[in-house]
Image (cartoon, rainbow, N blue to C red; front, side, top):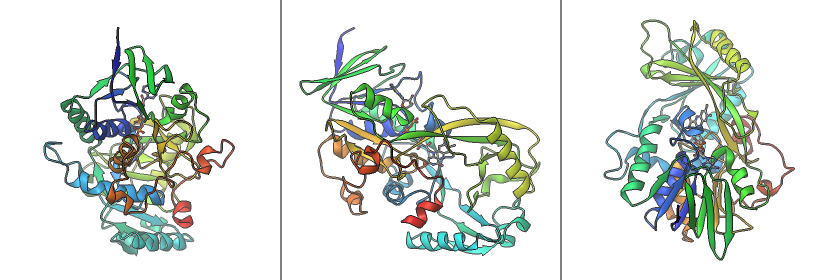
Length: 396
Ligand SMILES: Cc1cc2nc3c(=O)[nH]c(=O)nc-3n(C[C@H](O)[C@H](O)[C@H](O)COP(=O)(O)OP(=O)(O)OC[C@H]3O[C@@H](n4cnc5c(N)ncnc54)[C@H](O)[C@@H]3O)c2cc1C
């Protein structure tokens, strides 16, 4: 088998790699390498698939803002189906948590969200199964949307092929060598060469950097568990919002006529085919029984997925400080689907050695604040990422 040459090699065909490959395919020939038999098998196929500017740290929130227009009005020919549909989000506070809810309301208003602060009784208008007696106040955010992740991923890949790009499945990267300005990438599906490599390998980004001979970067995966069960007979769940408690001990949302719940666990993990943790499944069911009027009679489906973070939870996008032709597109955490459009455009600008797109730069994104060379990413002994998003809201 001869060596295939391209302008760009992108590693990992989750939402990050597929979107970056699409963006780069305007600027040259792209080969997208995926170790699994099909794209989207890991984190991308396991998310809750919602979009809100009001979840996650500051820079990710801005990348979500910069992604919204594309998701709401995709380019001509990109897809025949809507990529986003209204969902809404409801945040619930117990006694003693009102200050947290108020701080969150203030932060969301500062970010320009339209919100309604209300009582837990009134929250039943949005989600009739909440146990209002468990909570004292609530916040409703109407702009939260569901994302059709499968349509987004397959549309990116369809457009990539239309522009002459190539997806190689069963193509696990086993070796990466850089010499004379070219990367040589070895996989069981063949050997590939390009002057620029994009590392979009999700939970495996550190392994890819290590294969490339680069130093450790503090971008590591954490497992999250999700459980699906049937709602009460006869209930029409389609209009129920994504419902969180502000203390971040659970969320639930409608999922194809059923209910998905997560105990919002965040357990350190090796990069792997993540599985649901049985203790976390039990905790998720307990939270449903304690905080809603629903009963989980049987688990219809459960899964685990990896969310990969830098210590500050912010994006890791740009040239590696040791080798500028090695581009990181990593640290998506819980924002990789909703903010992926703009993250890919940003990564492509670094790979093409071009200016950051003006709309993204206007939101305060700089090469420095998303850099793989920033101090917390370089520091192997640095703090591990904090759990949840409220701490991040408070530190912004
Ligand atoms: C339970 C849960 C809920 C979530 N909810 C949301 C949400 O509501 N909204 C949101 O925006 N985000 C959410 N997320 C986060 C989101 O799923 C991720 O941020 C996003 O999918 C990351 O995409 P990725 O392409 O970086 O990773 P992945 O989808 O994991 O893709 C990485 C790819 O790299 C491939 N790869 C790895 N090593 C190699 C190698 N050596 N050679 C070739 N290929 C390789 C893998 O096979 C994989 O396909 C959630 C995540 C979880 C787990």
